[in-house]
Image 1 (cartoon, one colour):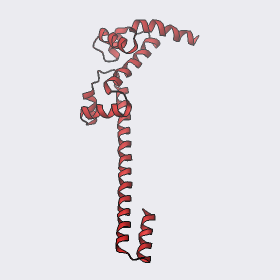
Image 2 (tube, helix red, strand yellow):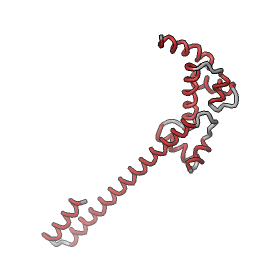
Image 3 (cartoon, one colour):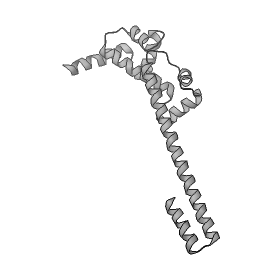
Image 4 (cartoon, one colour):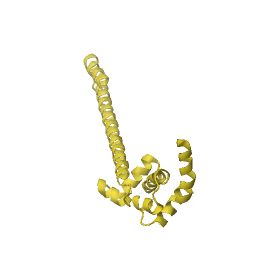
Length: 161
């Protein structure tokens, strides 16, 4: 913008050509518009990234609850559809799937690091019963919680020896 303004100033002093000065003035205004638009996009991207980090943190701190996408959207003051679209577009993962994956990662830790019963783990993660938890766990990992504990619990113990 400064370079263009100096060119406009020089042109006015040297040539005093109204048509040429108008073209340079248009170039200055166009450049200002481009820079302002670029800054707005950066601010919007930062704000979206910040929102996504807040959502992830909220999910992390509420793992023991049966969180729903609608509750998250309501908490942050956004429309559910907008929030799910933004989350999926930005992270590549649907919000519902992220919620489930997050719970299953926590479940894996409980299964390998504790001796909690499967029903207790299900309750800690906000599932209504161990059957729903087991079905969800198997859908995500391909193994039942019991089989996962048997396979990976031993693996962890062997690695620690």
